[in-house]
Each structure stands twice: as C-alpha cells, then as structure tokens.
Image 1 (cartoon, one colour):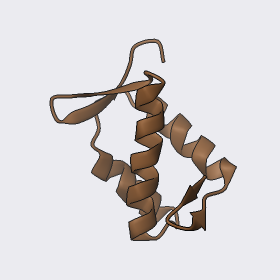
Image 2 (spheres, one colour; image 1 turned 30 degrees about the horizontal axis):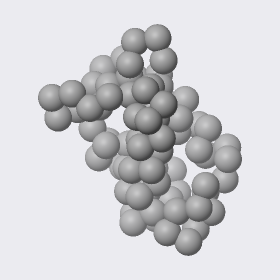
Image 3 (tube, one colour; image 1 turned 45 degrees about the vertical axis):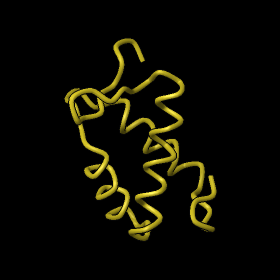
Length: 76
C-alpha cells in the first residue's frame, strides 16, 4: 500500500488489519494512528494509513462506526 508517497510493506498492513480485527472494545481512529506512529510510521503517513485501512475494512463490512467509535462487526 502506498500512502502519501511512502510504501507501507505488506507485513505492516497485515499486522494492523489483524490488530484492528482483534479489538474487543470500541476504539477510536486516533488510538490506531498513535499505534502506527509508535511503530515507525511518520505522523502524517500514519493518519492517512489508518484512514485508508479503515475505509477498506468498512467497505468489506468488517468494522463499523457507531456512537463516535469504531467497532468490529460480529463474525468478522
């Protein structure tokens, strides 16, 4: 995945996807952006990376936005 001109390796994309889908409690996008930043992605890239990943997961009906928080869809 290429974000803001920087290539994000497939291993990172898969790890974040699995991490998001393991969440038991509702979560905020900001929490995942901070996690991406702490894992070595620049701040601007981490925000856009999380946004694109959430869009893909939402379109695949794996996560949903409810009451100001993201949550994993049952059975995803």
